[in-house]
Image 1 (cartoon, rainbow, N blue to C red):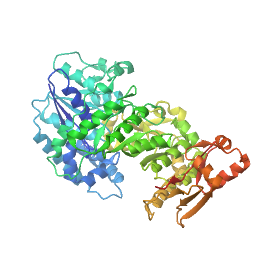
Image 2 (image 1 turned 90 degrees about the vertical axis):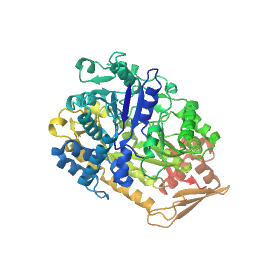
Image 3 (image 1 turned 30 degrees about the vertical axis):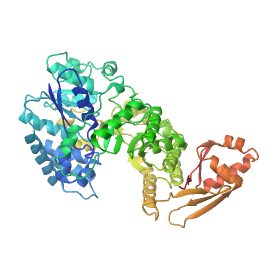
Image 4 (image 1 turned 90 degrees about the horizontal axis):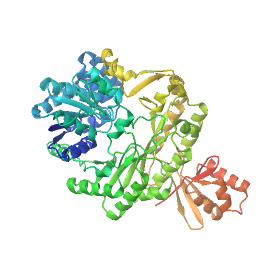
Length: 595
């Protein structure tokens, strides 16, 4: 068997595709002779249009899809261009026609360079913003190789979308739903006449009965139980292609510690539709995989692709990294870590930047989102990241259905307290297919769901009517929520302006220095002089006792000579100066130690 795997724009160009690397590593290790080649056309596209332009387009949910829509549906291109212009407004970027001409030329050149006559199966990995590009490429391939079997898979190919793609696009022969390694291997065996059709996890247009027989149990059976048994991902083809272009960068390599999410309960989330359980590698295997990548490709920057790192194994891994003593930098998505010591361990092991699912700064809103964290824990995560010397990026979901005026007021109050920390980004709520909100819309005040307006720009009506896409729109309280959350949007912009205008970014905006029996706290405020506060004796001790969230009850126990009324007055004074964050029961000192 000869298999060619493809990852189209708008994959991040400075890293190889983890999906292609894992699939190639797995298929190549099977007993049968399966020859696998991984192709990354996005590298040539980034070179042709310029890395800055490519990066700007890839940051948009819709702009890149609009460009390929214009090529795939020429009669509908005017609508796609309107979407592209809206998404790229205010950014320096070539116009729609110029960019589509580049994409068309690069697709033609890529096909000219391929010899697919000996290929038995062509697979497209379809993740975020890759659907239209993959559909366009599949159509172009079928035009030259009409008998070549084409399979789509990836996080975008849920069962519902997969079935609708098979109905709407005759050029797709198979859809892999869920995890890809075992189903793709079984599909190659089927095509070679060595096994049955893998109906539990592969949809095929020729067999409608098998396409509707899928259940969670059968898909779960196709998942790799022990990720430690997987071969290492194979990125050799990416580095071979990289040598043929002139983009001046050293790649960031992806690492996969786990699959799925150990929490997997957030009401808005549909990121784990392809996984049916949470699995992870142990720390020893993860270190061995890292060493292999380091030695083979000589890169020092890595990004974990996990939705949430496995906490215990990750802590052991980063402790291993301290002993490994290499200048390696990591990025990861994590849930809010509750202890400062854990943040410091991760940072000492090389974790330099993280994305944390903050999402909300109102306890009632976090409860309705089913985040499993409190505002206090979110604020502590922002502080701990700064204290550990780590960059924290996070989103604040605005306009969540059913949000109240009180929740907006609470959000605004907390935003004023977290001014010293790295600003969060505004993320307007969108309705994701398969999320709890989408599955139970009535619980969130949603009266109807329908196609997202952007998808109406991307697909002709006759095609869109057949598709079941991942991002939807809805009828409910959208207009009310848009007005209600405007003050939060303004405050987020002011937060960003404050940090952009700081004179000395090397110093934290709110920090303290310890003099043994006194503290000096340095505080930057918007449009004002730097303030200094001195805490002496017992006041110093109480403030340091609030380094991590601590209950007021415990403070009274630790400092039993202080009366409750005195303690409350002292804490209220610190809170009014925005040196301390409090909720109904607990306190957290906001200043980080100056180092």
